[in-house]
Image (cartoon, rainbow, N blue to C red; front, side):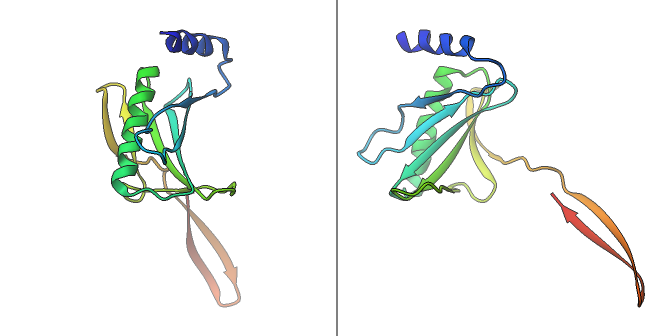
Length: 148
């Protein structure tokens, strides 16, 4: 009960532009539990970052951790979509690398509309094509340059 009251106070006290983070106590079934925090976003989906420090989890352990952390985050605020992003970081190192248990460009997310966890393809910016026309000594050439 105290946790809900604290969350309500945090959500109302924070300015709209700021993105506060809340530490999540999830995926703690074994001694090597990950660090997890949820970033609240008032304009779009919330983000849960799950960081495994010093060990690379198996795919099963990683998926269980993501599902548990998304379930915990949905209990705090299930009114918005919530995306889970898994990371690995070596002990004593500041750099993190993304983990992809569901394949490249796929992510696990909580859909607020259906109240279900789904694997979704990550939305990318649309591909645009820029045509560059150049005049050279050998005549003219037209080349396409793709950007994201």
